[in-house]
Structure formats: structure tokens, C-alpha cells
Length: 130
Image (cartoon, rainbow, N blue to C red; front, side, top):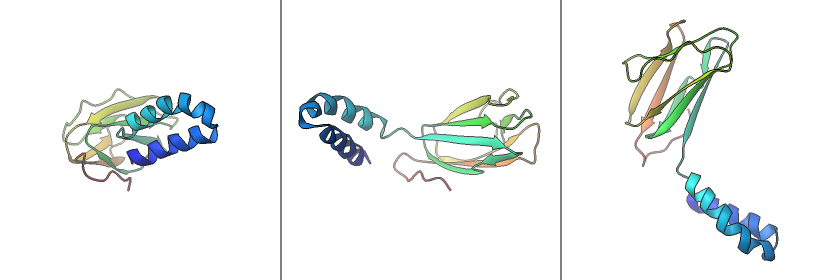
């Protein structure tokens, strides 16, 4: 993944011309390489559902839930993995960083029928969203 980002940065620099490549590549390539290992997880709350309902991420990923509904929702862990969020109004968000591999169930504590799962893999596993 890092190699692809480096090649993309070099291609951009080359497309801008050889004269500017020397000035751009040292800035673009390290920035892309630095972000290559960063994984984020975003969960949208809309129409009384979590989207995606099942998210697969790598350990160390910060997952952010954002309420897109017109009514408040609250995030809580089924196993008390994290402290529950405050009630989230429209466009409010709550984040938690999952450091340990495992399967984590969560729900809306205001609407317990709303449930979701975060699967956290070790940093050497894949991190594709289901």
C-alpha cells in the first residue's frame, strides 16, 4: 500500500513537469507514506440504523459515529468496552479508538433495537469493511 502511494505521488510530480518534480516529490511522497498506515472507521447513524452495521478495522483505529438522524442517539458498548457517549443530536459525533483485536458489539442506549459490530484485527490482518 505504501509503494502505491509513493508511486502515485511521483506520478503527480512527474505530470507537473520535471522542473517542479524535485520540489513537490519530497513533500507529497512523505505525506502519503505517513498516512498509508492510518485507518479510520466511520459509522453513520441514519433512519434508526448504523451504516455500516458491521465494520472491520485494524487495531489502533479510531471509529467515529455521526448522527445524521433528526432525533438524538447514544452509543454504548455491550461489554462496557468504552464509556457510553452523551446523547448525540443531529450532526454530533462520538469517537473511540479500538486498540485490541476482538469483536465488539455496540448499540444505541436510547433505541436498544439499534445494534452494530466492530471487528478489530491485528495490525497485520486485513481491514476491509464488510
